[in-house]
Image (tube, rainbow, N blue to C red; front, side):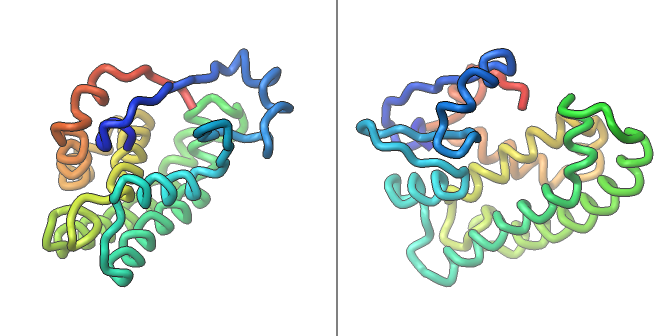
Length: 187
């Protein structure tokens, strides 16, 4: 979002090795953390909404904004549902049967959720989450799709419309170079 808005920023990534030392110094024991003028903001959703307001990336219509935010929240429910599979794939745990979790949790949940996302995007006048056009929610969902493509080699085959949407977001002029050249982070 900073790139899109043309605002300089420092993208500080923390390695898994660094995290145990840094965690106790954070306000909530979690990341991400946004620091602006020595003020700290925590929690992803709060950061997205703040930057969306700051950078005019919210639909002007309160209804359209609520619909876009609803789409983002829907992903959060999906994330919670697939957590056992996600944690295993991210290397955060070694508990669970990968194939069983994939077929019994991930596949049914992703089929249901991304069918709905296809409907939202196809019904939108803009081709993005909000009828009014590109919003902060599109940044969020596009990034989630990248993570899912990394976890599921068949994701693009199963959801080509969603991958097209993600690529449309990432090919926006103001951010395409950043997306191509950014630092890679493992969760």
